[in-house]
Length: 267
Image (cartoon, rainbow, N blue to C red; front, top):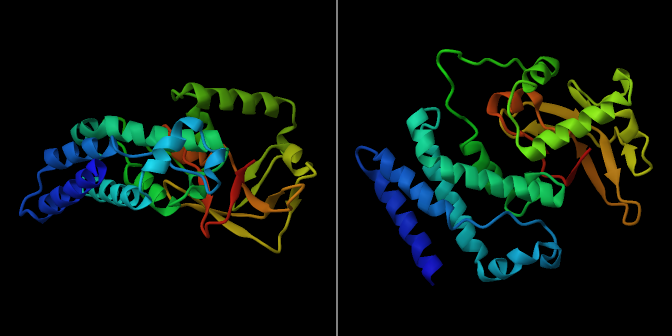
């Protein structure tokens, strides 16, 4: 009852703020901070028994309708804030960091993209609503979409311990492979030779998929699938390191996802 009343009060407050003749930016920022604290992590499209035991009690108590309403409120509030403004971004940074941590932990824990979560459209909309960050007018950073140029820029950027580990792991693996055998992203995504050689990976050109970057919406084609050895269920393979250009620009992983909502798996 307390959660329901709180979410209803947030909805009423946001409606009142947005209907005012002049928006109160600080009040909207305060609402985002309060709302984010009640947000539960994304859940996978699996049975609850597969989820983390620490989350089961909360997930059973939480109403899916309430959480959907809360995500809608957050996306709407963030959509009315100019997050490219440094002061505005700093005002809601704790909430943004918390929400990004929830999404990233889901992807790491389940080894899948956010697009595979329940209510994925809402989660992707929520992440997209705060994908823009303040830039320094003095340096006016411009990153070209060329993946090689972006890869060089990534070397100078700080990364979380998890991202750093993945990057080192990827480099170590690439050192063992000739350059021609590395994964390639042009207008089509092609996994590395090592991945293509796995018995559980199949090339199915007759069933192409379109992958889109969650940040800039740039698209590439994909025709390589992971095929479960027992159930034969298929998941389209997507680059686990995400879109290099957007990663360099936003200083976080910007993953690819199938535009038609198909199940996916990192390469």
